[in-house]
Length: 469
Image (cartoon, rainbow, N blue to C red):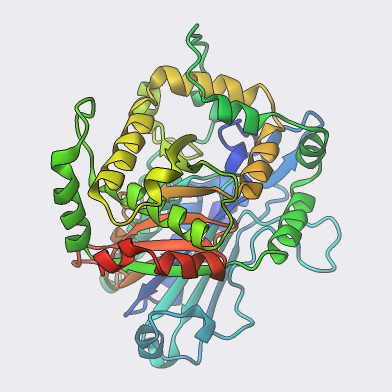
């Protein structure tokens, strides 16, 4: 840790309008390993990786104009929580129970971001926490890694985790050779300055969805919530979540089932669509499942469409970001609507292909000009994101989706082997979907969905499930 502190340079980083919509969320994952790594190796490599990601030791503050900033103060660092502790549950027990975390002791510090330690007045909210849980008889380990979405998106999160594992393997090799004196690990130069997102490009064509503009429009309430401290916003979020009856659900989808759907709808793809991907098919499937689940739950009275809010990475779409090693939020939310009368029909390839093509059009429309317009728009109102989050949460016909199948979660080898499972922890939003790659060598997918039991029951009654399983 001393080397990390010595390496830190004090600085203030202004967060961007692109950061704001997800700043009330966190990115929490469990990594399950059948073999362990020495505590000292993990800890040394963690702080070595932190030297390249000092933003994890910052304090988030809100300025008087409602802009969020992160302050890295070398004399008063807000260090991430880092814990390494034993557990009296055997790894095989967790594996047999499909890694049900409720079997872990209740006092484990899991899923607790956006909190202020009780009784510590004025304590800054931690922006990252890591907990290594060592299973009984050294039978395996779980690494719980939770980072604030205010500073990282999924790509940046995985960049940190991969860097930690790379350094761990390097140090482990040196340790096994009993040669720790010459350990000198070159840095990769990650960039955190949000100014790389700035654009002076202007277009007369308005590409931003009018619905998105309406959702983003600030109110007196949103301006107040954006103005208060991040800690108080965190407390309000917890109160809001406590009033909801939502749970995590995990569904395994075989690669062969998705491939079957893909082959089924491929001949039906509309002429203006150059191609559709397996991810388009997955998004279409989730949209249909939610439409039918909402309908069965009786929550669609008066609605005529389903609104999917899709998180899209703009790095491949903006040239200056392509090779910048940018570690921040570079995702833009895109709305995709589908008519209910189409989605509520029985099992139909025509319904699925229509949604898949609609999704592809929405995503393909996000070129560099659209990204520039969106940057200008979201930065024009620093409190609009609160309105967006609140209005989406209240809409009975919407869900949010993010696709993590290409982020390399299963490339995180600390030196004892690849994880047998990587899974999101509790997601702090209702009707939130993360599409994950399946376990290694299976070629499958896993859906992690946070929703109410009523919606989950309706989803399981969909004809599409019967066709997949």
